[in-house]
Length: 578
Image (tube, rainbow, N blue to C red; front, side, top):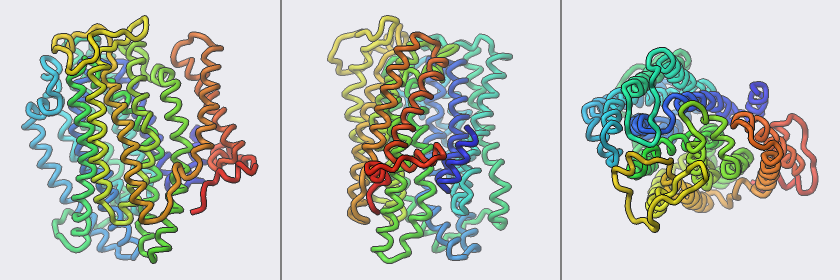
């Protein structure tokens, strides 16, 4: 597998290196979630940990990678391209100084205001879950500054076209948590089991979860440490400074609207968690597991392509308007083709065989078959908008490269509104649907216009599907945002074809993979989840590769290492002219 990743990465250039780094970190992230599921299952302790981690995740995303990519990288990369390395170094140093000061203040506020934050983030929880959430927020919040500094390192390294290290660095963060869980769970807190279906948290479960929280802080420090040596080689003169000159003002002017756009997206995640706190115990944890798998293809294929293309699209704007539009349009089509080749089959697999994926990864220890079905449903809702959400990353980068940061902010607001309205309409209905040994069971009166009583939510006997309503809203809203971004870009650079013009080829391959999956599952019968996945998923992958190769998809050649058939239909697979 490593050789295949390396070969594809070398063929795809910068985006391939980003994808290879993200692939490594995401594999480590999946391993972390496997450990979390085995030791904590999907109950009250996981709800508390997931809620507490929203604070560092929020500020990392607000002040970190996304905002820096849109505001800092274009200016820093342009200074490097113009051989103004001294000015670039001063810009990087000032941005780092401002981030350290801002995050330091936010860390203090987070620690002191842990109780208020808990009540704001999860107003529907009480008792042991609330107490543990407060303690965890105080533990994990100091890691915020470290994660933001790591994102700054990513911005500097990407601008110097050093794509791999910054994206593989989170492996250290994940491994630290895995080690903490293994040592704590096996040797210290041997009774740390999650009481499924109730809000009871025993002493060992609380202790192990707090150890996991401290491990996130240590892991963040190590994540920064592995990037520092290369940063010092590339920019040896960086020192903390607070001089606001022209390039810094340019970054700040972009920073504010981009921060607004990212803030709206993060507000959506907070609203999902806030709403999930009014659902049955386990809803917050189900969202967490579903998001891990949902964000995997977005990170691998959306972020990798968008991150690699942003510096080039920013540089293209230095040409005349017609040449810039043509160059950006060509890069968009190439990027969208790469994204669709991997994301379309992933989304279809999540809907058609998500239980195989979730079961193979998580179903062991404290994580039951009912939990698998619950997370599969949540993942299926996310999958509705997976291609739209992933493609939107690239479209946002194109707009940022063109200097347009306002439309992405407005599109994000629309996305949040649509997601919240649909989510609220569906979540209370689906929270009356339980996942039991005999399948789905309706447990309450329908239609429902409010949450279940607190006593029922805190002591439900079966996992519920309320979180599915939230992810369906998220999936539909992702397509709304995509259409708004695409419409604006088409006015700037010309016609942009969906999936770069190859949606029919990818869908044909994905449907073939689904057919193989269905037949394979019927033939092999009941197997343990991991064995079932090891048989069925590779066969589905081969079917997808063969069909897309026969249709002449260029990336099938990159993956297989052999030229595809060149039929008349296949020649169209390269997509529309730029």
